Amino acid sequence: MEHLFTPYKIKSLELRNRVVMPPMCQYSVTNKDGIANDWHYTHYVSRAIGGASLIIIEMTDVDPDGRITDYDLGLWSDEHIPALARIIEACHKHGAKVGIQIAHAGRKAEDAAEPVAPSAIPFDENSKTPRALTIDEIEEMVEKFRRAVARAVKAGVDVIELHGAHGYLIHEFQSAYTNKRTDEYGQDLAKFGKEVIRAAKSEMPADMPLIMRISGKEYVDGGYGIKESIAFSREYKEAGVDMFHVSAGGEGQIAAHGRPGTHAAYQVPLAHEIKHQLDVPVIAVGRLDEPILANAVIGNEDADLVAVGRGMLRNPYWTLEAAAKLNKETTVPQQYQVSFPKVGK
Ligand SMILES: Cc1cc2nc3c(=O)[nH]c(=O)nc-3n(C[C@H](O)[C@H](O)[C@H](O)COP(=O)(O)O)c2cc1C
Image 1: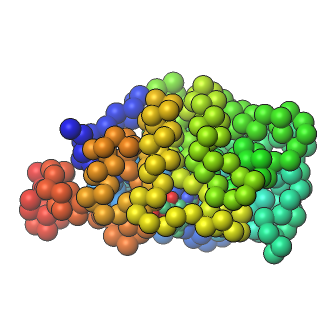
Image 2: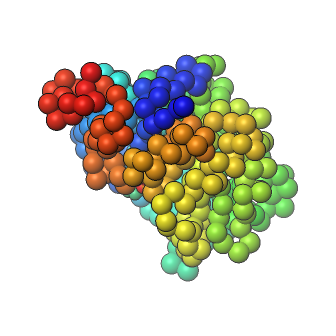
């Protein structure tokens, strides 16, 4: 039976175990230039040393005005490539594969003078009212995603993740809650997402998998549920998505209200549905930081990979400790083997 430390392969991506570090914004860029610095290097490389098999670099934006804040990472210029390449190369040396989450914050771009969105509806009463993108601007936006993906590939990533969750631009298009357009992008809520997927694929090697992060459910009146997310994910799969990373909406995401469940594993049923309804690999995420629980998600075939976010912020060596707790074999860096005698090879 498969477990948390069984290797995994999808297309050319070969992982040493099933533990993923999900994207987590650090808001730590120093000069508002979108360039990764030593904080990012230490942050990601320590989780590679700590045994994670796939590290997905935080939300990295395709446009300066697509950042949540001016302290986010960017990929809108070639100048962003070298610092990311340095991080990726170092993670590789420690046995981890690296992805990056390509994104645009849409109406949630807090520091943009004028945020953009599918429709001119603010997030809440304290937010700026975004400008609705014109058709020409939407086409330009798809191009920005394409160019950012090309730069990520140049920097050496093993996989691309598109951010279609948490109320950012792609999610804003796919949700009837935020997309009130009457043109083709309103008639087909998945149209923008599909165009971004195809643009991303056009820059990726054929054997490199594309992950899409989605909110499987929105938890707001007028928002979508799992039935709708299965339907748009089916279209995304046909457009080229190889794996879904299943998160959800809730407070602070598509809307300021709408609290989701916060108990352990609360998003796993959504991942399970997407996996089995669409026959597609998925990453489950959300309060899975008890190793026995994360292991059960794999063993029960709810998901193919498990992402541990806050657990890994608390402990970069979460994966090594999980192997020790579960009594599974994993490769421990030689320097640390004295601390993990049972699991060290
Ligand atoms: C500090 C922080 C920053 C985050 N930034 C992102 C992000 O950049 N992109 C994203 O999709 N999710 C982001 N998330 C959500 C996480 O990827 C993850 O889905 C969430 O924390 C639930 O998993 P957990 O219970 O294991 O922490 C962030 C979460 C935290 C705690």
